[in-house]
Amino acid sequence: MHLKICTGERTSQVKFSKVWLEETARKAWSEKKARKWTLVGLAAFVALQLYFVQEMLAALILFTGVFVVFALAGLVLYLIDRAGQWGLGWAGHQARRGLTMAEEISKKQLRRPRSETAQ
Image (cartoon, rainbow, N blue to C red):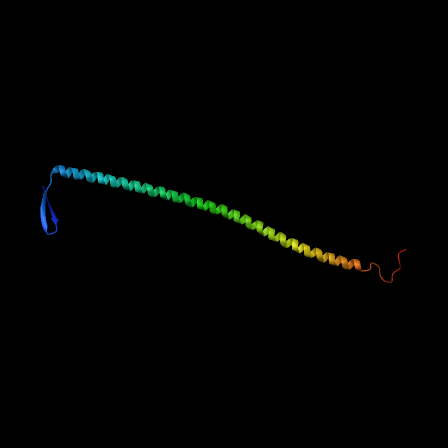
């Protein structure tokens, strides 16, 4: 068997044997096998990475949920504190108003000016 090889300006013929063909086929087969297993390994690696990414996303979602729950609890406690401060301020204002009214009442005479004195 002869194979024509073109290299630039010259064309040369290379003689090869059946043994050489078998070796080349065997190498090609092993290269195909290697390529196949490389692709299988790459697919497994990608699948593992996708699984890792899925796990990380699941953890992110869970931690986000926990963070939202704690943030809402903190917001509720803050609003309760602010409402309590407002309520104490309002109660203090009402207490001062009540004391002022009680002082005014205590300064007034409890009897009518022209009434008989109590004996």
